[in-house]
Image 1 (cartoon, rainbow, N blue to C red):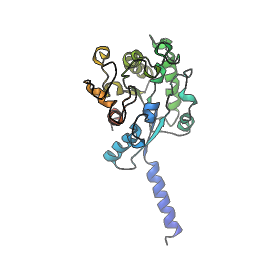
Image 2 (image 1 turned 120 degrees about the vertical axis):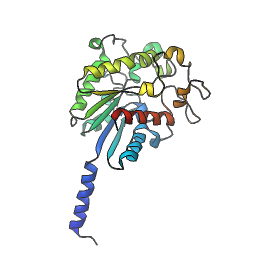
Image 3 (image 1 turned 90 degrees about the vertical axis):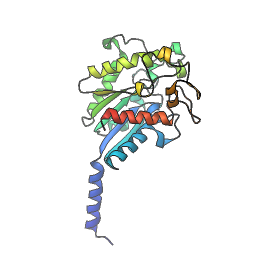
Image 4 (image 1 turned 180 degrees about the vertical axis):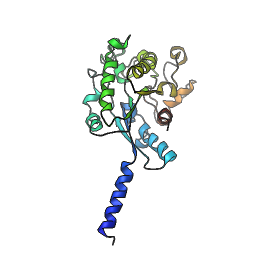
Length: 253
């Protein structure tokens, strides 16, 4: 039997090893939570963990998934991230890196058959409620151990009005608005361009099909459609793999 001193030393060594890991928090909505994937191993934070383990060895990085399906960045949205179960868990800890990808549910509006989340008020940052609440989230996260904060441009929406979302907001507004928010918040890194990584293009109105299908000639539809899932908003397993790789590259890891 090992002595108590040996067991204590082993415990301290294990604790030191765990505490030495770089801690990454992934903040987001259902795309972070992993909706329409085949299961937890396919979620993008899980695949990011696997990529980092393969590159640096197990225990170097610790990725935590704080995705909340349906969550909005806007505090007055129909399901604010601020009021979801993951938020108090996020702010109860300190982090080395925080990646934020919210906005897809904020793009819902009444004209698309959804709740009136998007107020179409973002012609300038000064009048943009989404940007104001994004800044509040960034300021909140800054206090959690002064982590490196990366913000991300969400994936493209492949069918207008799906889930009550406005495709123009997601595919045209966010690719320029998110970089503007990053530039307006000193020290924030990125943006990590998930829109482009999953096939988004500036001329999406002419390039995208009306919706993705298994036999779509638009190659990026393979990030959303396979035999297991064919969703117009949430990636499939391959799409989540591409997302995880884009995050790894964006983090410079």
